[in-house]
Image (tube, rainbow over all chains, first blue to last red; front, top):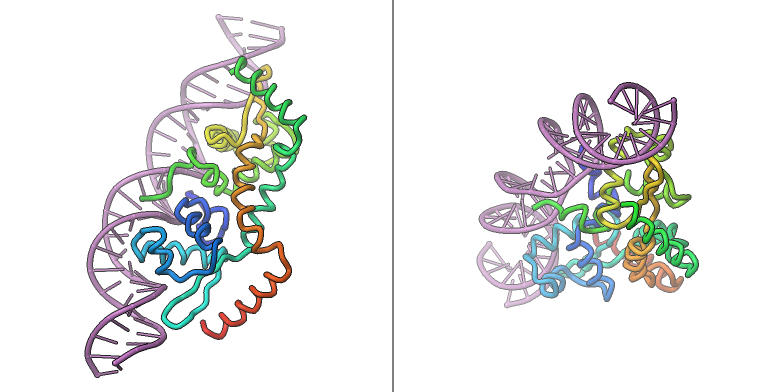
Length: 112
Length: 112
DNA sequence: TTGACATATTCCCACATAGGAATATATATT
DNA sequence: AATATATATTCCTATGTGGGAATATGTCAA
């Protein structure tokens, strides 16, 4: 069986590099689809489709304004990612640990 | 074209829920494959294959010890994920912004 | 060397999905 | 109503990949 649906899992949704670029653009400011099209240089349907996935998985919200649809980052869902990664903080935070890891890596080179 | 190779992108590698579970287990302590097999209850080849992907993408390191191969989390690569998510910190950190977002969401409900 | 233990690899298949092209829908303007 | 603008959706295809089963490789002990 392949991977779980992109539209159900934020981690899966941001696995696509283009979707990360969309989020990074939206991080600057709320934006309509066409601004993203111009900024990213992709076909409009491509942008809309990626936005559709991001919307369905909850990583962005949108609101209408005239003919445009403005997309914005949803912080809550991105916090999920951040919190998960934070679980491993101790593996990079402490200098002592880093030294220990470096030593283990050297040992690994011999045993590999 | 489907998604880019899992083994080239940490974000893609952790898109698979089972691989996140592997990393979470290894977050507790360095561990040989069989410990993971017992802990997760998956077939050994499945565990080895997921470890293979995590290793190739650099999210874990390994070293031999007798017949066993001990796997450990690689903090540096996980920091990459953490740093990326941190980019959106302001979207959940400030109370004022949260209030603003809530207002925008209410407006969205009307216009949707 | 033989056997037991520990881990990795190969082969196959089903399936989700990104991209492309064309088209559909929605909203504002005249 | 007709047109222009803005965005979404549908259909198609190629391809990466997770799971299962079987097997291979590697390492220690007797």
